[in-house]
Amino acid sequence: MNQATPPTTTAPAASQRLHAPFQASANVRTRIKICGLTREEDVDAAVAGGADAVGFVLYAPSPRAVTPQRAAQLARRLPPFVTPVLLFVNESTPNVIAASTMIAGATVQFHGDETPQDCLAATHQGARPYLRAARIPLGDGAAQFDLVKYAHDYSHAQAILLDAHVDGFGGGGKAFNWSLLPPSVSSHLVLSGGLTPANVTDGILQVRPRGLSLAVDVSSGVEADGPDGKPIKGIKDAVKIQRFVAAVRAADAQLAKNPHEFLSAT
Image (cartoon, rainbow, N blue to C red):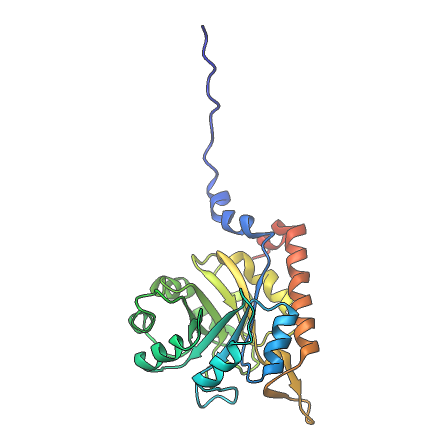
């Protein structure tokens, strides 16, 4: 009696393997973090707008800084499945641990000169999830930043956050040149730095294919305008948050419709 021959399978081509993470994530919703929150109404607006995470700056020199106690108070307003993120800049390990324990479910974001060992020590060897910010130079200097090596060095991080290298450790409203990033990075990425409702769609389309996944992080781009037309640091605008989220969803829709178009453009 003849036995059926099992079907043969062919290993995917190298190009298919390289692009598999992007293909798998083409229909995935881009996660959104609203950072630099200081007021109850802004936390509520971020949640109502559809944010997946909210950021509290625990760096005293920042105009958006809050104390750990204030961050804990604001975080208590969050519903389930919205993540509080605590941003530190060159803070001591004991202080990072102490602040983190005050806020249930918090993720830590290291935004200074912390080494891989510093990050692990402050998160109980990575038991608490953390993000590591990469400060990408403005202009043509972005091409000189070795993001592949940086992601390897901080391989225990949940994601690498891409921010523009400006004075004051972020929140400067400046965007780096996204097109100069390497085409393939073996890490989850968070795009930050100068994002606004007007440019976030393009940012997602350019950067999503380059990493395992992409989230976005906005601060100054959704802040209220002062009398001089400049953002009021630490004060958010609910309408801008809604517009930002809508622009992110527009990028997701474009990628879901034709992901290969944007992949081939990188």
